Amino acid sequence: MKKNMLIQDIMNNQISIPSELLLSYKTLGLNETDLTVILHIHRFILQGNDFPTIHEISDYLTVDDNECSKILRKLIQRNLLKIERSENSQNQLSESYSLEPLWEKLYQPVKEEKKDNDDGTLFILFEQEFGRPLSPFEIETINVWLDEDKISPALIKAALRESVLMAKLNFKYMDRILREWQKKGIHTVEQARQASKRFHDNQTTKQSNVNNSKRDTSFYYNWLEGED
Image 1 (cartoon, rainbow, N blue to C red):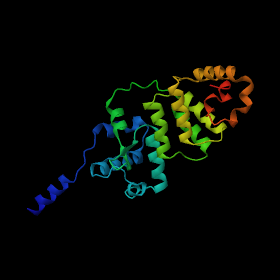
Image 2 (tube, helix red, strand yellow):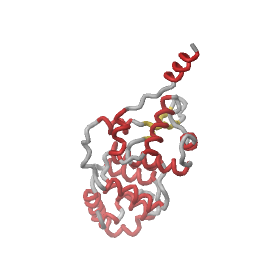
Image 3 (cartoon, rainbow, N blue to C red):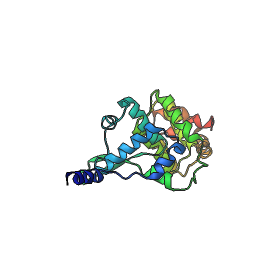
Image 4 (tube, rainbow, N blue to C red):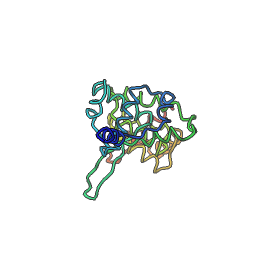
């Protein structure tokens, strides 16, 4: 009887793992440590903890918090893991991990093979400009720009350059630039260049005084005359 109860306890203490994950993780560019992190996040979510800390995850691994943090950034950067934010009735914000992007990649045909090769270098460029690794939140923000807002990598790079040139290197400022471009129906760097030219045609002699204005003129900054 005790033996049967023990077996029943073992059977009840199981988690369901998609076999496709075990068969395909290599094709997603993941190694066994990455896979183990995914499995633990999956386990935490199933057990009701949908936003475990880095320490809570690394406690079950053979790597330290720092290495675990790098793996989480890698998973978010590759759009296999995302951080979702929600607000309750008391306007309190909460965050949670979601593996939906991973499941979608595993069970949908590879239809995004054409995804801009620029996407990969985009994260590297941001880390070079910031002089540090990006946080999971910052990586997720870039992924939202790319995947949800459908903003081209070239235009995101343009917003980054604008932010650097204006000495306002932060994600809020870049997001504001990109939202402003979207409002004006500008989706390519070339369209931004044309808007800049129209602005300069109208401003001419007053351009030198533009920095004294309270109006946000970053949209028209002259970096647009430079590169792609």
